[in-house]
Image (cartoon, rainbow, N blue to C red; front, top):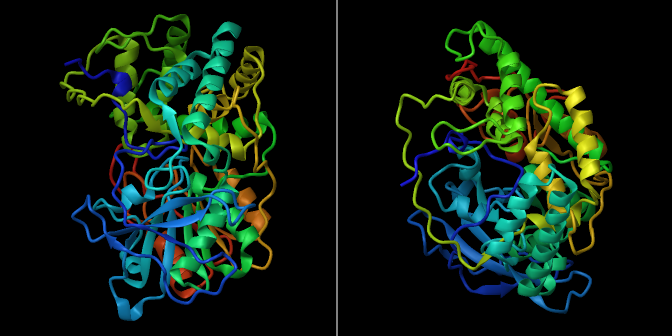
Length: 515
């Protein structure tokens, strides 16, 4: 069994890029949703206990039009998982949960033991996880697994030369053509506005007059579209870690994301320079990381655990863990071993043996992102110019693979941007609440600020780190300040105080501050 590399020694973090769905769930039989303009008052959904979990979670599917411009045409299924309100006598209604990604399955998450909302919400609502169209228990986007892997490998080296960039374009063309062939017409109808229309069909099928929703990360695009399209059906909406769909330039998309990681790196470096627990203590952390980058760029950086080369892209991916202060001590040790070429003293756990990939897999990242965002990198020279400009402005980190991954997946995409960028609109809704982490490295804080301004929403700020907040982010216990504000809005429709900002609780190196 191969030893675990330092590059594989990742720390937990939710990412904007997709997490591919796992094994398929056996859902309850599909039922037709009442047309979206009807006034249903009782649920038409046939909930059944999910067959692949011991948790008290019910599953079902709802049928919706494949193409919403042809409501009487071909249909697809949308997969759901529900935890019923623990206090039925105090039940308010249903709350829909969109996990984001694109490609994170809320249905799969809900079948585990982890609590995805506070107990107060579980008490008062039927909490329902929704798999967006194309994903997992919904009718799937299907792609050849080998082509998915080849496209990913091409993205990792596309910056090196025009030949590598051209190879990426060819790989993406093949992947896109293959996914459309294996999937059929659904492939061209999975943008976030379609998902919002599916959400409205779910509301009708549930028999709810108005609906409550929480969307995370990429799922906030669906929240924004729903607020525009169905403003009179909103009871309450929370977007946590928000996308800014008004961004139209590649530079603007990259600038704020690399800037967020640079800010977090500088905080990490300052902590290391004055903290004896840091492996770079007394050695000038910024200078040491600069040496790591130069070795990676020259091809001389080697993972001492495996002997594998670590290039600049892989190094920046490993270094993303500076975004989580709880793990600063660990990531500093990892980077120091890479720089010194020494193996960690402890024996890393073996890499789990992975089952062979199926020939065809459920893969949504390319088509969803490229239908929502009209970005087109045309050449390696453009990538090189962009990276040089970013390196001048952000000399430590230079790059953010979360942003790059999304942009490069659309090079050569064989489809249309059916939901192009536009400011979010929310006229006629009740008050809305957005949540932003001040140091979010994926859906960055300026995006949450922009979305809140566009929608006229109240922005609740968590002054800490990680990607998305509710009901408590990575590495520390939940913030009472944050959860009281969010739950008060979702349960009692109490709008948080304007400009509410809650202090960070993370302690660098581990632990929590008292609130």
